[in-house]
Image (cartoon, rainbow, N blue to C red; front, side, top):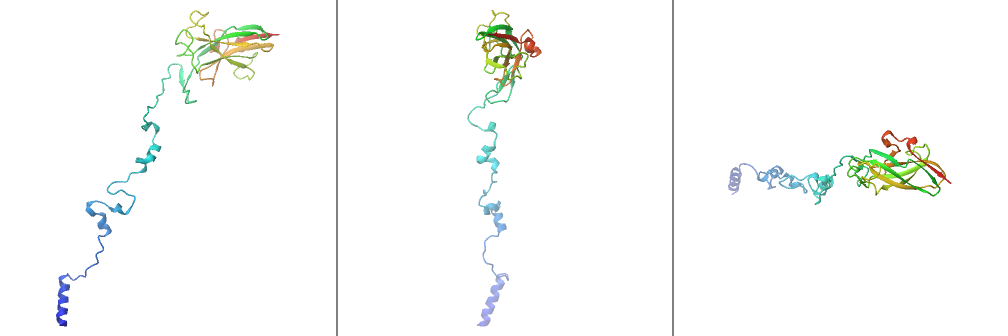
Length: 243
């Protein structure tokens, strides 16, 4: 009986190739990585996308919108274009509202070049200005919000550009200026302002014009040359105020 059992056990071993059976532990990691003919090794990474490359932060999501240039975003609105500066107008970045400035080419203290007043008397003074592309549009005045004209007066022989003793008042376009005006100049506009004699003494007076809303000025004395040869006190207006 024992001999028969031993013989049967030996035959069983020969039929299995001489190897003992392994426990079924499932496919190896390498086998899983190539399962189905595709790489699924990323299955162990819970945040990965199976079967496709995970998008980078620059390709999707809120970060892409935040980092993109404004001009490349579809906001549903047309981006305003920069208007043509045109002749005489210059680009400037001093503000977003005033993206341009006019270049004041020439100005002059027009009339009168001298006066004698008594205290509290008034005097209307005229000045002219040339700005290419603006004052030559018509033969009358062509005002613009950025073009500012001012009449000032101060100590004799002082420099109005640096002296703190000069006083300035805003001038306005002369409503009567046009082709029929005395010494009319088609390319120039004419401004006027009225000063009041408040203190006894002798003063110079002059005009100044700004094409950038008052940030910079060109100063104007009298005579035909006006500002073209620079400001000269000897050519400025002269005002004498008597008691």
